[in-house]
Image 1 (tube, rainbow, N blue to C red):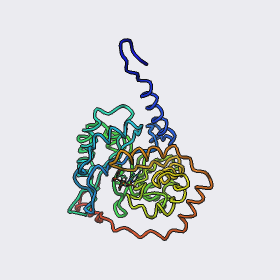
Image 2: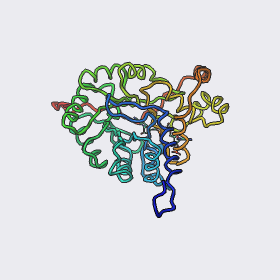
Image 3: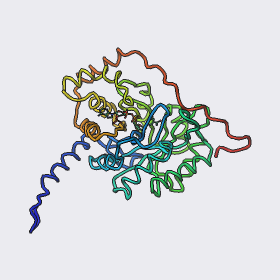
Image 4: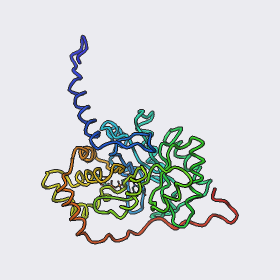
Length: 332
Ligand SMILES: NC(=O)c1ccc[n+]([C@@H]2O[C@H](COP(=O)([O-])OP(=O)(O)OC[C@H]3O[C@@H](n4cnc5c(N)ncnc54)[C@H](OP(=O)(O)O)[C@@H]3O)[C@@H](O)[C@H]2O)c1
């Protein structure tokens, strides 16, 4: 594809880009709410911050978030996950700074309802005023007119889900958000929420070595709801992951992270892993996982290793129980 008078040949570059785009294609696609199509391997932007024991911090040192995010898009990833509390606000601003005006095919998913009350502690808010201003704040920081997927960051066991989803349904009717998601939801809460408004996405913890939400994933598959798996790589705590997939990774000569992601992509057609990284090489490694097709014997071997693992110890949660709304105030 040399143009007259030019010696610069674009053909190898275009061929190379096509190969890269084809890799992400092999991970499959999912239609959010039956209409908004994305590749199933997505990107979680949280690790562009300095995430420490104190939950979500300032921008990670020595990282160029814009360069990473542009590479994410170049590699064909078209779904990027963030939350208003990441920073707070900083992670959404990193995304709009890097990618606005967004290419047509890029979908941003954000979350809200949590605030950081003090170091290491998050407080959920479910009242109408907070949810509305959280959505409006994200719209402003992300420079969007509509949020493609807005997810309630924490479904509280004691707050009626119907009230919160009612508020989200109103915001959807106003056009401020296109799809509603729920994070850390049970099947019961999902069923109750779906009686009020369509729920297009769930965002729960899930990986090859932590399958406590198998029932929720099966429910999502049955109802065509996307299931974004957070901590798809166990948030960098790789011991259990290695115990499950180490042998298969060694036999194939690839990384344990790649096998962990390939297993997730094969686990269910509604499953969308959102691995996070601040390193180009790891990002490329993760995308390359889309081209790995595990054999029946390999999956059986991984599942047998999983069966041998000890039960997972419950993590102390940084999220405080929700406070009841002020007397006389309606949650809606
Ligand atoms: N809904 C919720 O409550 C919730 C909670 C937590 C997270 N999330 C979402 O889920 C996303 C993913 O969570 P996460 O990032 O904590 O967990 P993760 O994706 O399971 O793991 C990220 C960690 O793995 C490392 N890593 C990534 N790819 C690697 C590779 N190929 N080789 C070696 N190491 C690799 C990263 O290292 P480096 O950073 O050093 O590159 C980082 O330390 C977040 O970005 C966020 O969007 C949601």
